[in-house]
Structure formats: C-alpha cells, structure tokens
Image 1: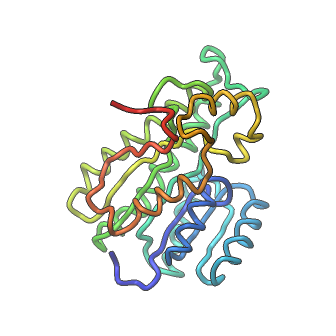
Image 2: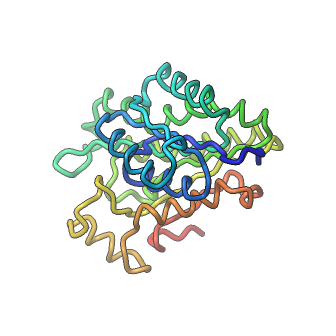
Image 3: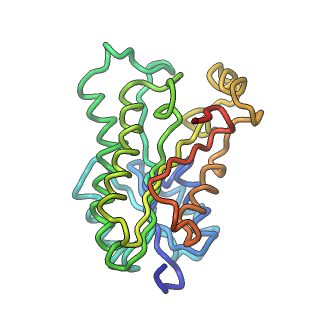
Length: 257
C-alpha cells in the first residue's frame, strides 16, 4: 500500500444507503474519502454527516452525474489535485426503475430505460475505472470493489431485466480488469448484497421484505454496514490475494455451489 498516512478512496453513490455506509467505514479506517451522487441535497447531507465523523479536510462531497463522462473526469482530477491519486474505488451508485414498486415486464422495457440503467450501473463503473486504474497500477496498489446484487447471481425475484443485466455485467468487467492488471498491485472484486434495508427497499415490513425475510437463514434483513464491513476488508492490504472474487453478503439466501 502507498505510504500515505491517509489513503484516498472514491465512493460513487456515496451519499446514501450502502455507499454512505462504505464511506463511513473507510473514514473510520483512516482513509480520506471523496463521494459523489447526482442529488445535491443528498450530497449536502452526506458531507455534513461524514465531516461529523472526521476532520472536514478528509471529506470531499460533490454533485456528479455518473452518466456524464466529463463530470467524472473533472471530479477525479479535483481529488488528485487536492489529495493525490486514489488507491480505493468503490462503485456503489445504482439505479433500478420501478412502477408502483414493481419492475417493468421484459416486453415493456423501453430502450431509453434500458440504456439509462446500464449507463448508471455498468458504464459508469467502467468510466470510473478508466480514470483511476492507471494511477493505481503506477503506484503498485489499488483496490476496486463493485457493488453487484444477488439478483445477478440467481433467479431474480424483484429486480427487472435491465438491473439484473447491468449487475451481472460487473463480474465480467472485474474479470477483464484482473486479466489486464494482474501483478500490478490492483485487485478488483465484486460484492453481491442480498436484501439490504435502505431507502430504496424500505419499509422493513413491506410484502417484498417479509417474503425476503422468510428466505434468509440468518433470520434478519441486511443492513448497509453488513456490506460496508466486507468492503473495508476487501480494500485492505490483507486482502491482496483476493482478486476477481464475488462475495455474497445475503444472510444465506443464496448459496453458490
């Protein structure tokens, strides 16, 4: 790992839910953390919360649309100019369109909607990696973690086809990066959360959550910090021999062979 006293992490979608929990965890483990999302009010709230846990000089929070390639490049350049090259990238920003709480039928998915979901969930992470991986490889250390989904690992029960396809694509992107940057100190892994209680999945007693709870051997729904704890480990120096893995964080709901 670089010798910097405070390693630098970028967290996309780091202003709410799983992304915000990851940002908090990384701050607590000594990182400087830069977060972004496209909703200004969430950015302001997250910046206030994160700076309450750490020195304000250790937090950057900006409004950035992950679908805007130029905006991503400007954000990363600002982080590098202020702090230096990031050694951690967490791709947590995600989008799943719903109609009255349900996804569109496959034959009713509009092409614009399909493209928008893939732009946020798959193309956005690819662009973020393009902006940071060369610097990680140059410094001989990098940790990239994609936040996928159990929906991309087994039969999807709630998510629509666009979301499932985008999250499944992250595993392929990770394999490609592992292949190209093997031996250069950069690891790329994917976490596949199960049913995690966030603003997107609340309330906890909804029919979907009650059904999920009945399927989970752990006997509870997940919390954002359950995922953040796994992220904290995968971004550490101790996880250097874990590369290209998919880590299921789902309380036992899905058990791969």
